[in-house]
Image (cartoon, rainbow, N blue to C red; front, side, top):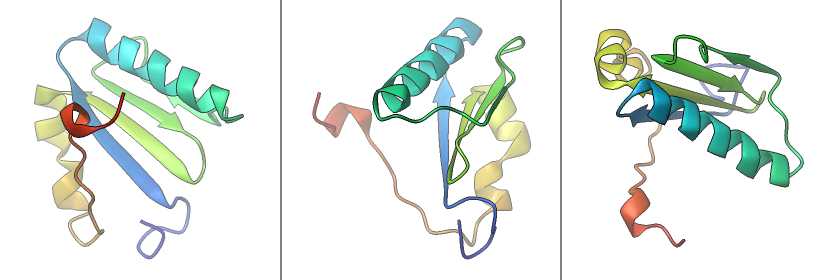
Length: 93
């Protein structure tokens, strides 16, 4: 992202299955990054939990429910950005 957007290096875009699932995903992201000494500069969307944004400066995490992800379609908006697909089932535990 840094070549296209000077305010961040990486967007992480993920989907959850429900509002509770998105809130839990956000909690886990914050917990894991806190373990690495990172705290978000800002957090948005946890009250509604259809689009949660966790801004760590160089990394911005977007967590969506499926309808909201399709509506905003960040992948299309940032089509020129390099992508790395992630399959959590293939990741080490």
